[in-house]
Image (cartoon, rainbow, N blue to C red; front, side, top):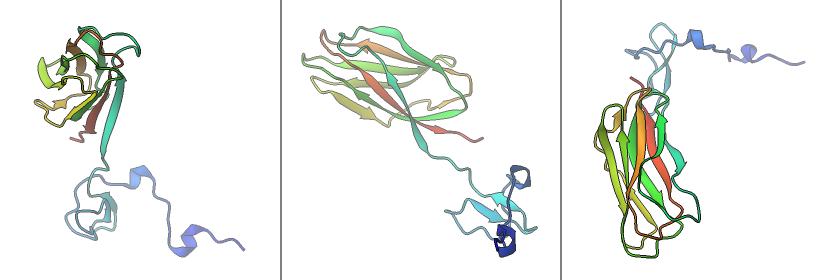
Length: 165
């Protein structure tokens, strides 16, 4: 005979049963705990369930030499974001000269990142970000501000974290 989960003490929880306020007392199990029971035996979230993530962009056509451009790629932030860093990758970079990419919050006119792939390297990365937060709806713009004659195939991984405030 089949027994339901309720018969062994497991009940289904639906979103409107969750109180998203802070836990002041109860069974919160410490810093690693995300779900707990408060003093009224209500299920609560103790911390937002968030994590680092990436947006990946193709900033040029593979096999075609890069050109400088102030609007290589733009997107509107889907929600409040904290920009955590940038990785750049090139398919080809055989003549000496830097490829420089900037990331700007165009809505607030704030430069966020300026990163160069130096010499003949094909990768670069940074976690140095000025003005790292952009609000939902803000426009973030990638620009190629410098390139030698034969750099090709530029891709970018923008490191992000959703902000829950």
